[in-house]
Image 1 (cartoon, rainbow, N blue to C red):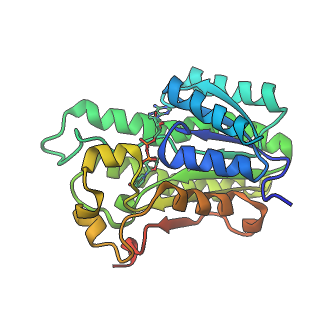
Image 2: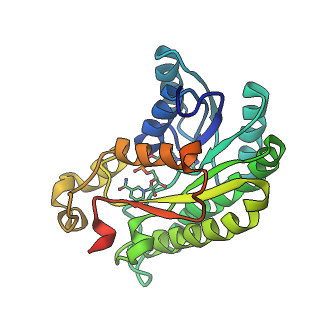
Length: 250
Ligand SMILES: NC(=O)c1ccc[n+]([C@@H]2O[C@H](COP(=O)([O-])OP(=O)(O)OC[C@H]3O[C@@H](n4cnc5c(N)ncnc54)[C@H](O)[C@@H]3O)[C@@H](O)[C@H]2O)c1
């Protein structure tokens, strides 16, 4: 039996990188997938790919930092698939504008807070009543190696991902009574499209070079995500899982 048979999953930022890999994998494992992304072309392409492999998916244009958009995406998920079991808050990512507190444009702080932290908060806010109605479910958030180790050089993003990390643990406690598990993945250097564009030679990046297993590909995080949202992880909640080639261990 497929590992997400009869499940409905909402994945934010599913148009590219880790989100795209996860959407394809979850659909392969039987889930109906709501692809939520600001990028219409990328999101629609992922839906077409899922349908071409025989799966079920719907795209909804969604800016996760906008409450109305997130509420709408959740509503469209319920309308399309009749319920919701899995929420994967994946949208986000550092930009080249980030850096030292004393140097970055102030709006970059609010941009990353909006997408990485407020976006995760909003999706939870609007999805939780539906997970409760379903009798339980799984929320998976996305933090980062930068929050695990507080690495230098992306201070706004690091702060936002730190918020995601603690929000995950708080929600895990709050929602256990509803049989809703809340975990997070903490990726290391992953060669998504955005990261390749930002870094060029990913292998030469200092963090990638300091990673025991070197940099990873989006599918590695997608596989860990699949485990954490599946019933195989039914006794796991409040966990921050580094998926980082060993980077957090050194
Ligand atoms: N790639 C890495 O090295 C790495 C490391 C640690 C953590 N992460 C985290 O993993 C997640 C995915 O990263 P990635 O590298 O695959 O990114 P990516 O840029 O390849 O994909 C992110 C997707 O999110 C979408 N998106 C951006 N802003 C959005 C918004 N406001 N609303 C909805 N969708 C939005 C983009 O259109 C894109 O499709 C992010 O949360 C990122 O912070 C990535």
